[in-house]
Image 1 (cartoon, rainbow, N blue to C red):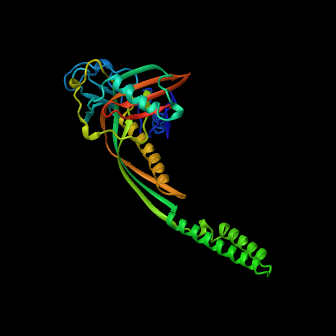
Image 2 (tube, rainbow, N blue to C red):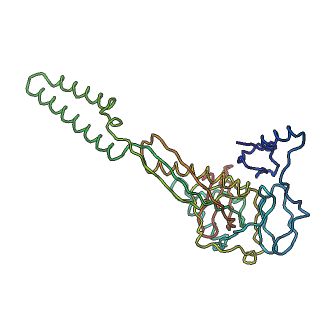
Image 3 (spheres, rainbow, N blue to C red):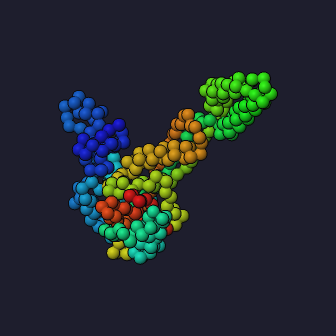
Length: 342
């Protein structure tokens, strides 16, 4: 595990540049090699802004500090900064803009904000501080996840509860009959049934003891979206799927010039590292939703090379009595990607 010496961001082991601030990373092995040779460690140094030209149209490309994903504003060709410097992105796609009206977006948000009695007129009592539309870059990372779960079998657990309650009821009934018969056994049998219940609940015959442990397998394949813009990582979705069937090859000519196409500052290598961690978290959530009384869980994720996807996104921010409410809306479908403060 490595950390950027400049900003402290956690980085993948193979990182050469910090995906957040753009600083070069000096690994422990590089330091040792440099110390042994008496020289400074070497890096794959990216071309300076004055040296960068679009590989398709030859137009100059001037990356801002920290940017690692840049789209040519003239022809739409994208390049990315990797371990070996700048290179062209082989697969660059986009989702078409279908929800372009501010009024439409505000109406959709109203239906979400004011849902429920306790939030009645929430939108009307909030101040709209910001609403803008832009094309945001996401890395779509294919992830194959295999999760092994050891859990108590729910059917066995239910059967155990039913058997336990029936037996306790039977013992209680015998005790009551003895009491009515005048033999003075009601108290004794009641005590016996109570002792048996305690033994069953706490010992080998209890719900945990009789219910069998079983192994389950939860396997999933994802085209996982990782936002390629550090400023948007706060709004990174955990379980959201873009309508990838609608995507097309990126064509900047199909985007209105009034809509900004954002560059990214998170590399594909960093996105793979993040996708793996997020899928591990998502697999755990799904396992706990599906199985009860999980005793052990472990996951393994494999990632493949991804693609860069530009998504039309509405960013809407309200202020409700000093509290920030933010919506990030997929302008291809109109669905909320994420929300904060609601």
